[in-house]
Length: 517
Image 1 (cartoon, one colour):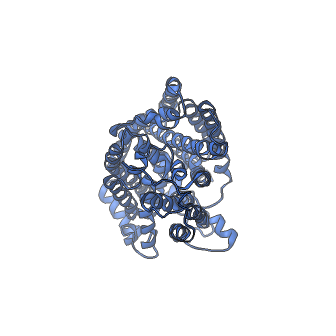
Image 2 (image 1 turned 90 degrees about the vertical axis):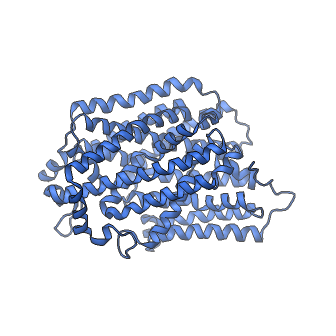
Image 3 (image 1 turned 60 degrees about the vertical axis):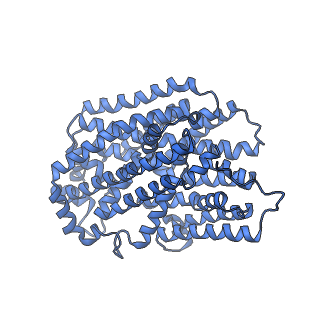
C-alpha cells in the first residue's frame, strides 16, 4: 500500500499550477455575471437569440463536444484498445461531414425555427408526443451525463497526485459542480457560448503542446513498437473478432457518430442557434475536422499512458496490471492524468489542467442548460397549456439546473456498473436517440408518419437500458452493449413504420408537414 500511495502521489504539479487552476475558472464566473444583463427572455437564455455565425458556431460546437469527459473516455479507449480505437474518430468525422454536406435533419430543423427537438415533435405529431419525447430525451440525457462530474474530478485528482487521498474526489466534485452551476444559472446560452469559445482557444493550444511533449518523452518508434509487441494486431485492427472492438462495434460507432452530431440535443442546439440553415451546413462541414481531432488526440494520450506505464514505471504497471491473481487492477481512467502529471513541466501542467477544467465546464454547462430547458419548454410548459410566462420559464429552468447538478453529485457515487465510460454514454444516449432517429427521419421525410408510430418508437428506445451492466444482471442476460443498442434502433424504426401504417392519423387531425424552405 505504501508503494502504491507513493506511485500515485508523484507529480510535477506545484503551487504555481494550483494558482493557475484556481484563477482560470474565476474568469468564467465573471463572464456569467457580466452577460446576465443580456438575458431578456427564454429565447435569449436557450438559443442566444439565434445569433451564432459560422466561426463562433464551430468553436462552441467543438467546445461543447470536446469536454473533459471526452478526453477521459477517449484516453481510456486508447489505453485498452491501442491505435485500433482511432476508428471511432474516423467514423465521427465522416458522419459529421456528411450531415453538413447534405443538411440531413439539422437543416430542416433550423429552417423550421424550433428551439428544441420536442418542439418539432409537437408541430409534426401533436402535444402528447412532445411531452413524451421531452421526458425520454431528459431521462436519457440526464442519465447519460450521470458520470461526467465524477470522471472529470478523477482527472484533477489524478494529475495533481491526490489519487490516493479518500477526501480528494468528493471535494473536487463539489467544487467543480458549484462552479458550473453558478455561471450557467446566471448567463444561460450566452455565457455558455462565450465560455466555450475561450475554452476552444485554450484547449486547442493545450492539446497540441501536450501531444508534442508526450512524443518527445516516449519517442514515436517506442510507442509504436510497444503497442505492437504487447497488443499485437488487436492494437491496430478494430475488426478482429474477440478483440476490444469488432465489426458489430464499428457499425454501432457509425450510428453513434451520426447521432452525436445530428440527433444529440447539445449539438443540435448549436444548429438551432445558427444565423441561418446555410450557416448550419457550413458549421458542420468544418466542425467534422475538429470532431476527428477531439477523438484522435485523447486516444493517443491513452496510448502513451499505456506505453509509459508498461515500459517506464514498474510500480504503476503493478497497480494497473497486477501479476497476482485475485488482485483488482487500479481504475484505468486514472492512467492518462497520472501520465500527464509525470511528463508535463510545472507551469505547463497548470495551463493544461485549467484548460481541462474549462473543457469540463463547457460540456457540463451545455448539458445542464439543455436538459433543464427541455423539461421546462417541452414537458412542464405544455402540461400547463403554455400559460407559463417567459420570466417564469427562465426561473424554472434555473431551478432545474441546480436539481440536475445535485443528481450528478449523487449518481457519481451510487452507480456501481462498468466504468467503461464511452460504452456507458453510448448506451444511455440510445435511450433517447434510438427513438429520436425514427421520429426525426419519419417526421421530416415521410408524410405518412403518424403520432401512434411516433409514440411506439419513443417507447421502443427504452430497450437500450438492457445494454447497461446492472440492468443485465437484474434481468439475467448477457449481451454486448453494441448489439443491444443496434437492436433498439432497429426496433424503433420498425415501430414507427408499423404504427404509422396500422394506425394512421386522421386527415383532419394530421399536423401540417414540416416546412423546410
